[in-house]
Length: 563
Image (cartoon, rainbow, N blue to C red; front, side, top):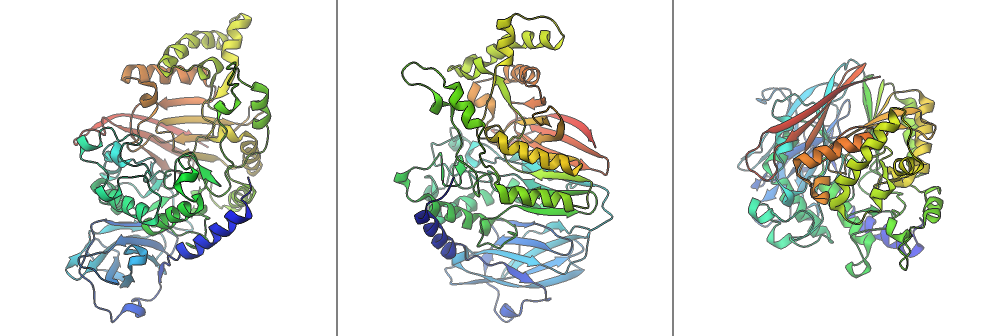
């Protein structure tokens, strides 16, 4: 989909003005530009964070909230090899301003390879909390443990998953695959229990987000969550956006949750991206004036991590089933739908896809791990279920079809009608890779040509999944592990499932969807990957409730993947 010249010029102008968010690069022991500037009286009420580690560098982040109105804020920072800060190896000052929303990002460089560090910030009247971070290594790494998160909706429930993931201090790195914030206002998606939980949106920020100030205030609310602060302080974070950092179902030139009455989409997107860059500890590969966020990290010969954008850079607008329905007779235009599905439609786009292929080819590592947003596997369900208008009937329809599929798998004969019922399938979510099947095959061909083991990570659906990724010829090219959400409700919310029905529906889907190995449709949580040279231990951890202040672990599902 092309952008009109008018929109291109508008976007370019918005970015040149809005994305003026420089990162302080620190190579010297102290930053001479602010060395004689007095330190300001501030609060560190939004916590601290680190991210995007390299072999000799790491990003540090905080927000220095001034206690009185001021045109600038100056704070100090330290980074040490011990948590008591007796062995400080780098320190300096940093000055920030209202036009950066008082956020501070320091790209600390010339650090030691494969080293654990501790960091903190200091204002006039005291220190921030301290955080733990680390650098990467070109060699010598034989084990790392990652925690993977997605879809953290503040009004929907507590962020217990963040706290649980890091409480044992054994996580080396966290990944956030997007929907770090949600753009909806009060009364929007999954806000029904917000007041009861004490998680209502701020009074001056309880509408839908459109402006730079809107997005900034929403990040400020999220960042004051204590569980989120613990997660960021425990390990460096590598993050990428999904759609809700901008607007629901974002694509290259619009979004489902944006219409012409709400102003110019590109101005809204520029505001959202500026706020994201200000509030997240990331190092964009082409600087904060660029939309490009996809980037790679090499963990010695153990694994390479490739973080992708599947939302805003090149995504073609999503197809919708309703656009292929005849309003008069209610018939579905199957031929028209298949024609559109057979066309090349971009999710990554040529440039990002070529970049990914080159990164994998050049990687010195054994494992190639893809961090991205939406499910990649073929998630195709029987057509009669997809045509059903009453979602409450879905569990029973699936249950009725399971015996037919089991008989077919056992080699028993089926009538033509029975075979039709289980063989006629349709993608359940056209917003995922199923809606971009031609480009998915291009990606699969690239991966197969490298001969390297590929593991895909996904979020977005609010449910946990384990899939085998096969090309059109039925050849396995990769595996996919998708994390549940931190707090956003999953399929049980839409299908009105209790725990028993959700478990039964999940079991039915595992039978009916050929490439699906496991799913959990009703519990919130996170996922860990324990990566070793020949194996990856994957574990999904589920929280009993995000609607109670106290929580416990309600279940786990684990497997070992071998190359």
